[in-house]
Image 1: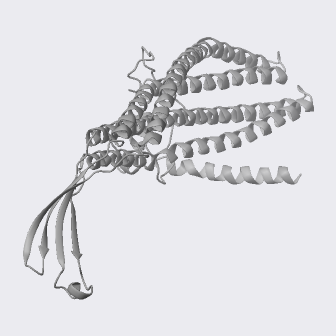
Image 2: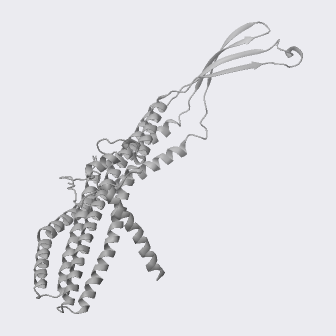
Image 3: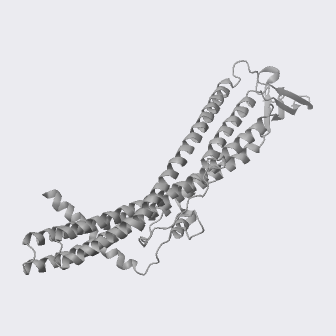
Length: 417
């Protein structure tokens, strides 16, 4: 009993918010799909779209990867060394009389193609990061299209629920009149009132769903804003006419770029196995005799134990993993295209059948039953049955159009290049 009361209070509160929200929305422009994509920052330009956190992060990652390319191009810095020998000893080395001062400059020479392989590896990683940023933008566009279609479907269901309430209110009124004049038993009026109460509860639920769908759409452009106004008219989202699993598809480009980056990492790690000598040159000052001498030196690491073999082996394993992942992504991508295309065609056929055949027939059947009911040829139960059949077809049509729109959005996402 408490759960029923709590549910009723919650729906009433939400219903009040929903009933009052459209009053402030009446002066707002109806949001189109193009407007929604622009506000999210994935199509056209809208004020504040560049601050969408769903795009700021990937763009920042791309900028960071480009900065790493600049860093990879830099050569090792020169080194300066200063030494003072024979300071403050004993006997002949006391004080600073026998001190020797040495100032030298050194430069590490990168051998084994370290710089070139480092640059190529950074460029390969930057390509992967840039492609992932493009995929994030394409994913955001997919979410916008899916949620926009979902908002349209919620609006259509809300309109359907309002129509059902209006129809059931009229049937309840007619049933009451017929009961008063003795043409219908009192049970018919009770049945009509029960149907009206059920329709009103469904209307409240539809209003909540409509608010939730529009709120989910607004969340995609990353800032608090007024809820958009949408009309229950599904947009025509056309999938690519010829969608094939070609290498230009963005997901396959990323898989290939990751494999190439793994290969570049192997070259980078192999170059690090080559020792880098440090060549130095300087001057030494003998304080006691006031003489100077030049110094030249070279330092070469001896790779007896550490030849970077562990990092090379790890990079080779990552290349094998990236190659296997590329094959998996290609197979899954082809399957996703086939399934999405088949489901889209099925939803399109179902939507056309429902709108062109099933719904007109149900509308005509309901019209004839209503006429017969007014003339006393049909009972209220038959009217309610015909109306429920028509409403079921309308709901099925909404669902088919929603499926068609969302599957078209998925096909567009899969075809993104």
